[in-house]
Image (cartoon, rainbow, N blue to C red; front, top):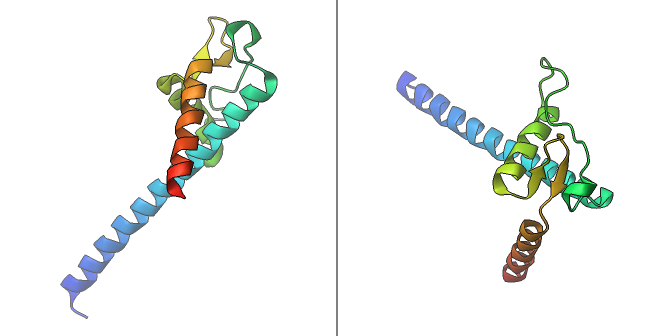
Length: 113
């Protein structure tokens, strides 16, 4: 096999590997987001007075892996407006945004059938 073809195949394999890694990370991030939402719903944290404390930063800086997705997922939920943070550092769900998200998910699920 010519060298240029080996280099081309290596480049293609690298691109495929990176794409798969990004996709799997996205799936993990989505799973953690749903876990955070479920945890807040279970605790009834739907308003500021019922807010609860959540792990919002890495517990161990040197720990590598999917356990580090929780702070990133929480930040993503806050950016989207689904989760709000109180001045005391507690978190609660935004009822309106949560209802919009659930409505959009049921509409998407209905259109897939």
